[in-house]
Image 1 (cartoon, helix red, strand yellow):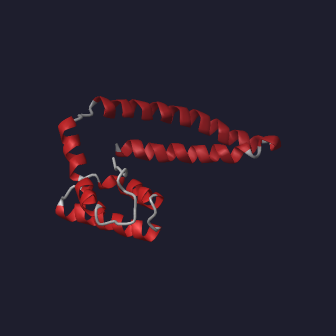
Image 2 (cartoon, helix red, strand yellow; image 1 turned 135 degrees about the vertical axis):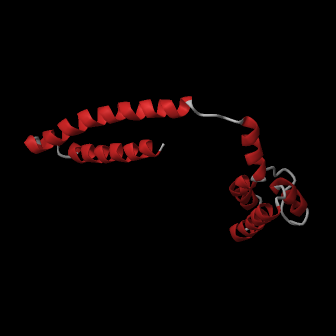
Image 3 (cartoon, one colour; image 1 turned 90 degrees about the horizontal axis):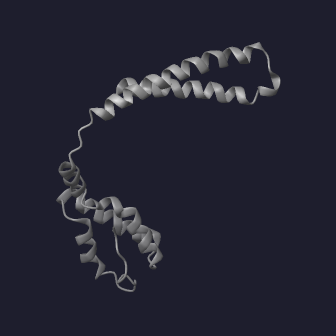
Length: 138
């Protein structure tokens, strides 16, 4: 995988050189075509190499759905905190207040392994003056 990432950086470097030549197409001279001759051939070979390496990586990839589900459950749904914050702002809270609430919930879920949704439901009742009855998160 490391080789593939290094090859990607090389490929990206060649792409930058090619893009720098685009602005000079109206000024065709021998210095521009030399870059193109090197880039086209090398970039094509490099792309073939990258595809074959990626094929090897994907072919040997083991996917464990149960483990994936466990990892998602470990996050306790705090990945949807941005959505919650924006919904709180839409429902009438100031951005600072919504941010403070969301940040507090996120910190509590990370440290105590509590569920983000359950914590939100608990504090939802204490947020008076804000119409949160229909507010749902993920």
